[in-house]
Amino acid sequence: MSFARETKEELAHIIPQKSCCQRAELGAYIKMLGDLGISSKKLKLSLKTPLSFLARKILILLKNNGFKTKTLVQDHGRLSQKNFYYIELEERVEELLKEYGFIDEKGNLSNRINENYIKNDCCRRSFLRGVFLAGGSLNDPAGDYHLELNLPDEAFARQVLKVLQKYHFTFRFLKRKSVPFLYLKDAEQILSFLSLIGAHQSLLKFENVRVVKEVRNQVNRLVNCETANIKKAVKTAVKQIKDIEYIAEKIGLDNLDPALKEIAILRLDNPDLSLKEIGSLLNPPLTKSGVNHRFRKLELIAEKIRNGALG
Ligand SMILES: [Zn+2]
Image (cartoon, rainbow, N blue to C red; front, side, top):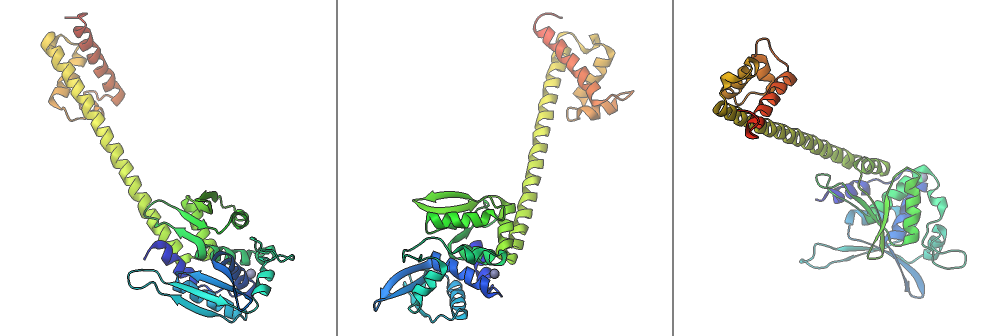
């Protein structure tokens, strides 16, 4: 099961305790999944979803609010993974839509939910849960972090965005083929959003995957860094040995300052040692930068010989 589906299934089992919150969540479903039609000269509202658990939840919310419903299942046959569930209302549809503000005083359709339904914090959370269940998607945290809310029209998308901003979320607003959507890429904010809408199981799972992923990334970074350091040290030692052998061939190591000769021989005998380790073999011991300084002198001598200035 996908992470998004798992999250939605968890959320579908939450039935808000307070009726104000139930109505707020129902409002999200009516707006996001609803389709208006006429049946026997009466207004008919049909809510459509491919998620059986969501259909069940909507039925409970409608029943709790005293609405009679009819459910249909559209079976697409064995080849299709997707069945669609239709929940149909034929009574009090106009009344319901007017209450929610989806039909205004003049009888025109409106895209925004009546603000009274989302003025309380408890109701806003339920409303956002509904928006996510009806139009949300969420990537598995093992991949890129991405949470998205697909919305039916721009006016409603802006209204949802305003609600989200009350909780300081920084959702981005975009359109895909003129369909508006809001999205988050930030793991912390995705976790906060899951917490706000009550997806606590999914939140824990998301957090676990994220921690494992980040530790693994950190280990990889350290290993890469270590490898880079080793490569650099090997390259340096190879260059030092080349210079020393060149000096030995051209002028002989005996003609070097005794301090330089000592370090040159140590290097030839120990190609794998770090500067610090070479320093510790000297008597008296020398710091890494002291050793580096001597190798720098050897390098300059080799350079001078190559340029014909010595030897
Ligand atoms: Zn409430």
